[in-house]
Length: 175
Image (cartoon, rainbow, N blue to C red; front, side, top):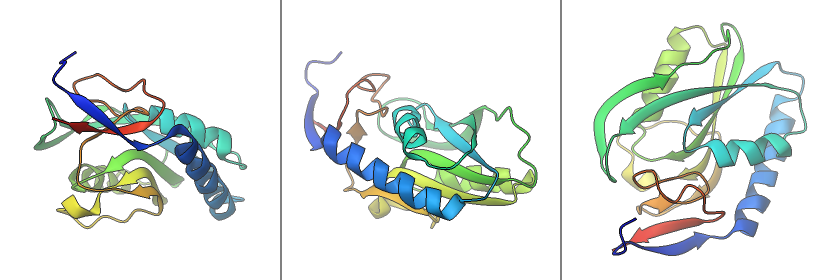
C-alpha cells in the first residue's frame, strides 16, 4: 500500500446504512408485484447490493455482471468491456441494475444498451453514488444514494488499485 496516499472520510457507516434502507423501501414500493432480476455490477457494488438486498421487502432473483473501463489508477480507459456476463435468462424481465458509482455515464450507457438489445423488458438503475459533474453521456439513474463531488471515492466496495474495498465507510483519496 502506498503510504503517500491519504484518505478523508466522506460518508460514515450510519449515513450509508440509513440511506440504503430508504432506497430499499422506495424500490420495494416501485417493484411490488414484479418478477424482477436484481443485477449487481461487479466488483464495486458488492457491499451496496448486500445491504440493499436486506433492505428490500419484495421478492427478486439475483445475478451479477462485470463491466469495466478502469484498468489502472483513477482514470477510465474509455474502452468498455463485459468482464463477467449474467448467468440468468433475463429476456422479457424487469431488471434493476445496482451500481456503486455513476461517473461519466459511459460504462452504464454501454451496459444499458447491451441489456436492451438482449431483450430486457425494462431496466431501472440504483446507484450508491452519482457524480453528475463528470457526465459525458446523459444516463438515467432511478434511485440515487448520494450526489457526490468530483473526487475519487474508496471504501464500502469501491477500490483504488484493489485496495480499500474493505472499509465500512466511504472516503476520498487525498494526495
